Figure 1: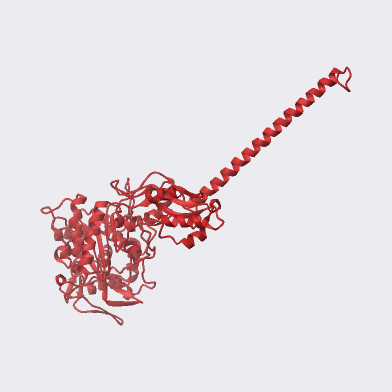
Figure 2: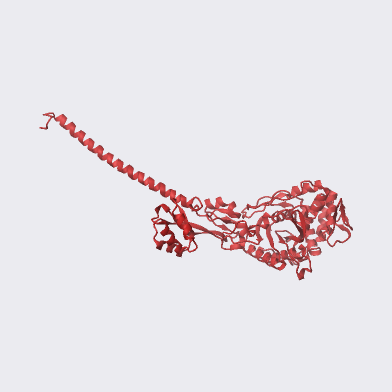
Length: 560
């Protein structure tokens, strides 16, 4: 018998059940407490681990690091790698885990001798959870740090952006910062695409052509002792940029001063007066008006006086000149008379229509807007007719000029390879374009740009020289010289534009430093070298009589 319960078996059974329930509940409670303790600990570890990793992957600075993501490659039009990422290791510290900050600093400076012991010791003593020690370690450095065996020193697998061709495409690809984020060029414009997709960005640029153009431009700078220069090769019918070079340039593998002169892209960021090459536009303006033909004559016997302003010719012919001869002999007087006869309103309307007054850009963040007069007077029209009083970038110039020879169709320039053609916009008639091709070819064969001729490639074009400005005044001893050329003029496929910054005279130029003596032959050297690489067939025996072509095109217009 159980004390206190007598013969009540039900009571005895009830008590046993209650005792068992209490024990089970106690056991469950203990289990749940332990379970929640483990869960909380796991969450705690995970949160802090993620936070520490985020410190190491999302920010930048002394106590954070870059986003660790796979950055896609950049390729040239033929699939050649021009920018890629290589795996690397970076060392960081968790100062709160260090046993002795000063001792840790002493050991680390034995591996990284360039570090200041005092500064490192001070940083490691701060109450931070993350601190960069050194980015992009070599395998030897990684092993040396491992051998130190310092608690609180960890490693993070990261990436380092690499440009195999170094300076070759510097102004095109741009570069990334230490956190592998694009800061200039294609790297900046396509930063999101390169970070979020494994698919490469394929450029329109051809590495082989780029190398040849850069090499010839470098030779030209050395020969004419210019302080800088630029060259572009454009596929006329698509707007694809095959080569783009600006010198001086830089090595994007090195984190140099982002404001250094070498990082200035003369092709897209400069505003340069085109000089006499603008006579291409003035002539197209005249022909497109249908009021003037290539054979219309203008009096260029004496300087043209406009108010207090006088227009002179450089080595003028002092005779009546046809429009053909005005372009061929590069007459400022004749060009100004064309512009004044048609008027400033019509001139401005034409230049606006063809896109000269709008901004032209490609996939680069550095863009220069055109500079032109707010008030378009007769004097403005006269000076603009021969390339002064208006300034545009070399990229802008080659784009607009190429439309003049491309049957009158302008294409937006691009640095990205186009799988399918994008329709362009008509800016002049097909007849005017045909006339201009003949005139530009005759300018090379019979005019002032004979040094631009390349046997078999049927080059047409025009040079231009413009005095540089400083504080609003023209400098008599400092020029920009440029040459625009297209080939073959029978069916233009490619355009080349070169510009030299302050070229000097040489014995070969007989004391001249104008474009016909330096930019034109430089363009010829480039065309002669890249023509075979581009697969352009020479036309030694099949070239037409360009005077006849010009006459027939003019007759077609007269009867239309």
